[in-house]
Image (tube, rainbow, N blue to C red; front, side, top):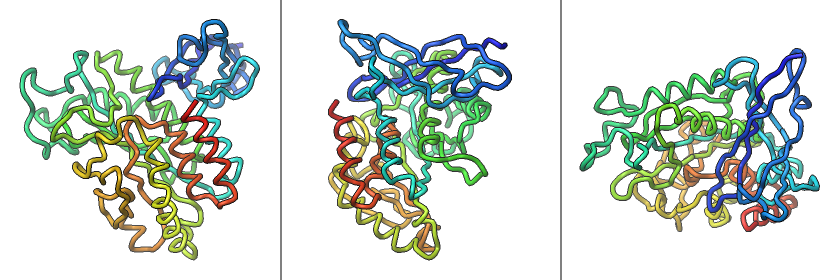
Length: 363
């Protein structure tokens, strides 16, 4: 028998933006562990905004796991859903919303997602990493995908995060410096490889990647901010663009109709999406800095100022994927995926999924 450290990870009940929590359990297994080797575990929900002090017990139900790249081979990161003490789904358990959306029709469409997660590195005093102690850096322009000490800040942490995500086996497919100095992006999701990339796996990996980034930042004395507008003024905000497609959208014979129908459905449900696309989203979706105004829906070919960008490959071929540029950096990817699935589902499934999303948001 082998003993191993398992880091149980879950989303808490913080508002308006959930935060990651984790704690370590020692497990025992032979050979290679399966999900059954990670037992259900309790925690104090009154300390995570998920229960009252007089009835504080909540449960962690392991649902997926990957190698822990920080502790090394033989140790694991374990994603958990939160349950009430009686085993029922907790009101803050948004992964369950996505799971139900798939069970109620979403899985039939074989959805694929890819998320472009932007974030900003801050000093402990809140100043963006790499900015001068007084005043401001040069205006935006040279920093996006920049190279050189004058254009880049934080690359060592970014590279450590990329290496760790690869070692963990996550669906990471790239990183780059973003438009504002100290701002970066990594991408998680479908890579075109021969691997599992269903919506639950992709969104679990989004949270694993965020956990790893936050954990590594402790070693660099940096704060990782997922705020939508970390710096007021003429500076880019931070988003989490969602690329998505269904099997109908990817099919040459049905793609044109499916893409057109998706655009119509996304326009008609614009405000439903905005409600769950991140706290303080109005500070980012202003119509400037590569965004569309929050009250306006617009789609366009290769248009990074649109709500939905139609990639050049999709526009030219007539089938493929779409990019939703509205989600903010502080999204809950479980809810965003569930929201997109609900919008594109057949009408008979939409009402049920929409109700679950509303219940989760108002919990």
